[in-house]
Length: 336
Ligand code: TLP
Image 1: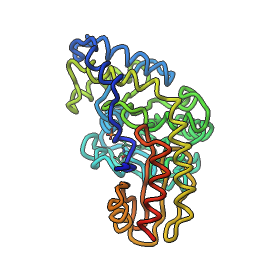
Image 2: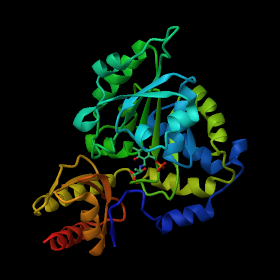
Image 3: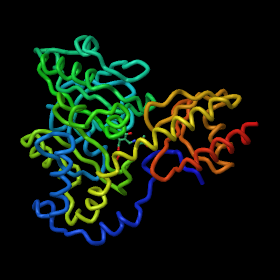
């Protein structure tokens, strides 16, 4: 089976399993798990923020960030296909009682200063006020577009001038840094907080980090507890996370494989592949996406539907160049 559904499907290798087995642990709700503490320290360094907090999922990291940044009833500005808005079970409403105001970020999901100024709502006796700007990098629904630091800076600076903070959903931030050849701390220099996942292309079995100023992270810890994310001997899962932090450079391989996959598939009748910037390949299909995926599954290739005629394929740690070549051949045969 060549599983291209997501970069979340990777399985921990023996090094990660050994790290989990040998991890020093303590009760993390008391702040006493040395492995979690080390991971939080290292993660904060990687993104150039004062502090970081370990969370079990990216969703929890984003939702804890929204809850920590906002007050009930405020508006949150974000892209209409962003994960925080589209794929987190309406968490904005359910968990933070905020209302989203969506912005069209175009083909690559970039939110411009003009869009922020347009979407901004000043608080008064009638209006709730804008409490937060959320950006996404790479942008999943837009095919893993890697958004340049200048664009992130411009958005965050506009938000700051208007008086509200910026959070980056950087589930695949490390893919963006590798693709743009910019260090992670530069990419999030002007934003207030960032969430990034260890469990996607970096290959950890579980876990994400939420980073920002010390005071913000301390308040976010209360919301993590509220959301059920206060874990105990979490060093067992944080240890593979520490290993995952060293997997950043190898993401270039996934990007290279994605480019090869797109080029190979683009020649096939009935489908066209968009040029990938990172590890996500979007395929436009003449037939319904679900029919395409059924034919693909018959030849042991898996992907996910992103729209009626749009399929997403993801390269990752467990997909080799040989797998990519095999996927191209098999799909060509299946569609013939
Ligand atoms: N995305 C998953 C699905 O939920 C769609 C995937 O397979 O891509 N932000 C972004 C940009 C994400 O893509 C995801 C996961 C998350 C946040 C949430 O992370 P988890 O799954 O750890 O809650």
